[in-house]
Length: 305
Image 1 (cartoon, rainbow, N blue to C red):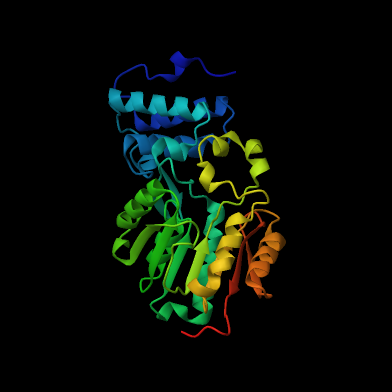
Image 2 (cartoon, rainbow, N blue to C red):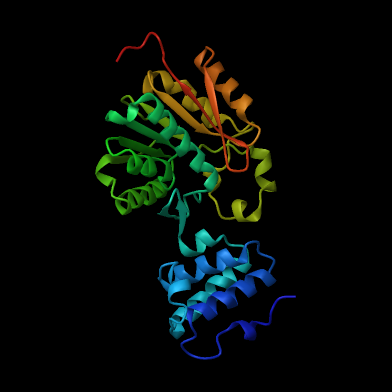
């Protein structure tokens, strides 16, 4: 049974950071939220504006009344079903924090598989010694492009998205992580408005089948933008758009595509049908053992650099 509200509110001015973490953990646990301890620490430190290490190193830190009220309001939003990333306005990805807005997906750990895949291929092929050009289709927060530019200091890149507000978030994240001078952002429907050639294409496109949107968890359906979720009737619309332009955009490079669970064969087949030939696909699994990223070396034989 949920703890009475009056038991949750701090009874005295200047309640400590440690006290609030424990209170929030109990409150979230009573509400049935999984991993209440981790969420409580993240929520409290973000709202309080302190480092996570302070929970252990400075638990006696006293919080003023305004801060306590803000924590209480944030906890109520979390119990009502708002994802914690939406409450605090940012989400961790590959060891970095990325700001969000209403036009962006929350970066998720599954998508880190794409980063791992790119860095593995770059290391194995020696591409890291080159000034790589990277394009990120459906950039959203910019988490894929910004992370790759941070990990590959010689690379430059372009992030494209159909949502102007998403590009605002992506630009801010590029500035936050010190790669803005090597990153450009532009509005484009998939690759329709893109010119120039790139060595690496990455994308976490919308891949939820239109008829499946209504059955998504509320945290996704009610808080992530539909534009970033809906992949059309079979979930493959954007994959087809990307494949249809690969020859002109990345004719002698690599394409890395995030996929949903069980979508590998459908994505690869759809791409090959658009291109008109078979491709040599590689697959990477996420931390849950699910196929999460497919990649191919494009190598269009009739295209010269």
